Amino acid sequence: MTTHAVTLIPGDGIGPEVTRATLRVLEATGVRFEWDEVPAGEEAYKVHGTVLPERAFESIRRTRVALKGPVGTPIGGGHRSVNVTLRQALDLYSCLRPVRSLPGVKSRYGDVDLVVVRENTEGLYSGVEHTVVPGVTESIKIVTEKACLRIARFAFDYAARRGRKKVTAVHKANIMKITDGLFLECTRRVRADYPQIEYEELIIDNCAMQMVIRPQRFDVLVMDNLYGDILSDLAAGLVGGLGVVPGANIGEREAVFEPVHGTAPDIVGKGLANPTALILSATLMLEHLGEADAAARVRRAVDRILGEGKTITGDLGGKASTDDYTAALIAAIKNG
Ligand code: NAI
Image (cartoon, rainbow, N blue to C red; front, side, top):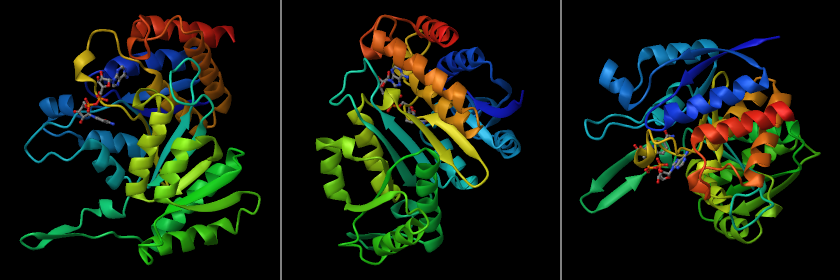
């Protein structure tokens, strides 16, 4: 049996608590890991004087896969966010956010199952901004053929490998004819290689409305950085919020799997944290490592325990501690 070497970043706040729970769940699957735990975030800053010690980079470059809890950024002092630094330094160009209704989690719909694929490296997030003259500012949206082609390829490839039926390219090319026009031109070129997958193009504002009214019509969506940032949170809102949604940032070589929520300073150390988002991020990691069967078992256990609604954490309306919920998941994995 393969042992997977993976970098582990427990992070700050509730990070270590949800990480502990996730490791117990992963252990119950029987998949073998060799964890290389590295510091990052506020705690790392206190000890090492930097939020992202070089050792963390070295580890991820070596293992190529990281499981990461939420991290805080020290306020003031011009510290760069760990998340942004990691994405840029490792060129994690694709942000993957599968959004699925979970049994027992109160939300507007019970049958959402879509995936937002967001371009992570350019667009309006390139940070090229300046004041032209006082009172007039400018932000430059950079869109390259290379980045558009690779994100489109990622989305179609993902759809093809997962047996998904449709890719929706989200844009505003009616207004930004050149930049979003290039994005569409690239998705159409890539699309030609995937005739079995249905393809459609939707203007971002229409897409936002349709996601609220009829999210079931979507399968895989691909879009630029800013649109993806906004629509992936909208999508999370459709299934119960950021607390239960997993995420991944994936590049040509490395991939970092992480939940979307933050360090939850208000509940640290109280045993109240819900580890579901990190556990589901770990299922994406399992799939990435070729352990799809273990991923499916964990997902089934999450569905079962949340669906039963007896052992769920406070944020979902229950009374269970992180440990109780984790124990229930482990029992469900072992029994089925
Ligand atoms: P947050 O997500 O940490 O908390 C918002 C609310 O949701 C809080 O009431 C919290 O208790 C609750 N919550 C979040 N995750 C939960 C969980 N797993 N179980 C139960 N309840 C949960 O967002 P906030 O307060 O805006 O940010 C706090 C810190 O986290 C900041 O320092 C921020 O920079 C950092 N952050 C880090 C992220 C990352 O590393 N990916 C993402 C977002 C924020």
